[in-house]
Image (cartoon, rainbow, N blue to C red; front, side, top):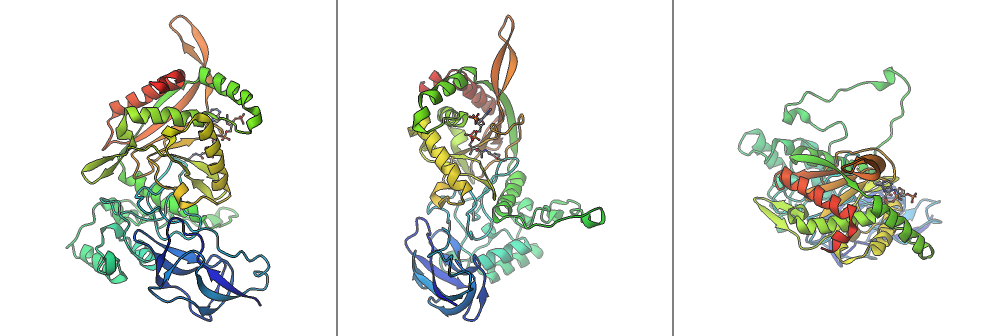
Length: 450
Ligand code: COA
């Protein structure tokens, strides 16, 4: 049996974090990836997982200790087979970037609690924390308190924390629940009252006046197999449900004529064959969308109470299909990058997403998201907004179609686009204008310079 020092893994942008909860004690048997302790920065808390399975021999930290990447948290007597494959540190833990209320994708390892935003119809994986509804600040609470709040359907963002820095304790959650029961307090929205993170079967729809979710013994009808959902799917599911319920979303569909752009893309790829960088339609789309966002800035905004926050930066998230579920890597400052650079970055980020290696910085801060199913197929779908963004573009597979040019039908390559927007911020007419302008750019890419 080998003794292994379990260390704090990569914690993204944070130098030092404070131990706020210790979840194991000497003598406990832990599995690889099991959470050992909870640490907290000014902005968020997260769990530190064990890189190995084994028995805890010695704790090397206590509550309120400051730790950083590489700090030894405990000594583990590892299982026989674990020592051989022992990685020195656990897989990187993702935490929302310090000042980023816009959390995007599900953290790969041990994010604490339910998170922020949503996804596209099939589903975007989302972030790890629940910003308060109005301020975008993350509520301070340990994972066990978050879990407790989720279980009893309390919206943590509405609970006032009585601890240091407003940290929410279990007692705070209990007294909030009591106040709601006695009618002294009402939650901000009935929809929030339903524990959105409580499962794919829809949570407690009773708060919405819905009939209960059907309980069916499927085995009665034939053989079945039960599999737990991946962590990413669980997190994204909670976000999808919240965003689907809370955002008054509308989707406008349109088609863009990309015949000439596709010819240009094909010739560009021929010219750049040797560089190894392949340009896909998505890279052009990002460029065209940034130009459209600049013309219609409300699509690059977020709601904050009664105010709209307009962002003067253009970070574009794109949904990437991974074996564990959908992730949303973010291309920063897409306005400052050419199509070749965008293609290269997209390729690198998509690979990292598939390998489970995206850092928190690579998943946060998006101002607008694109979900492209163009490489797969289908025609139009209704993407769900990735809150706190206010719009998302879904594109499907382009097809040759007969288009009337005033005299005759001509074959043109048409790209189906589905723009979902938050109707509280964006009017239908603005959405139609957005799609028209975007289509014009895609039909004649020189317009991107205007
Ligand atoms: N119409 C027709 N063909 C398209 C297309 C479109 N709109 N978009 C891409 N294609 C083609 C590409 O040209 C490429 O063809 P080729 O291999 O003959 O050159 C092929 O489809 C595959 O493209 P892909 O590798 O998927 O690149 P991409 O830049 O289009 O997409 C990702 C990159 C990461 C977005 C993509 O791989 C992915 O994960 N898509 C799924 C996203 C998703 O699941 N969204 C739903 C969220 S709810």
